[in-house]
Length: 64
Image 1 (cartoon, rainbow, N blue to C red):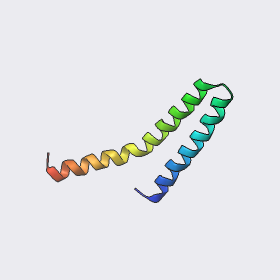
Image 2: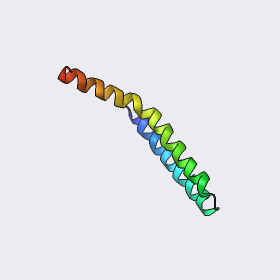
Image 3: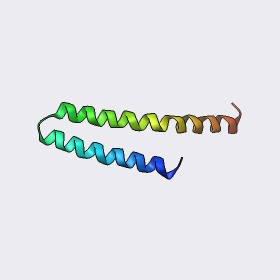
Image 4: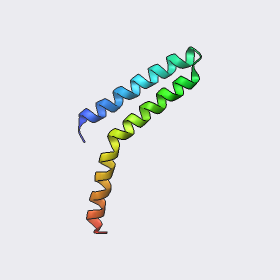
């Protein structure tokens, strides 16, 4: 996992928070929620391979 992934996650977090606040103040709470959910799903898709790699290395460490 490199610094590039951390910067991507931070950029998505900043973008989603700004968009969410703008949508909430304009009275579109549903779209703000969907924007937050889309950002979360995007970040999870980036992180899932690293979580899988972590569990595989733990499994290999304990030889289960």
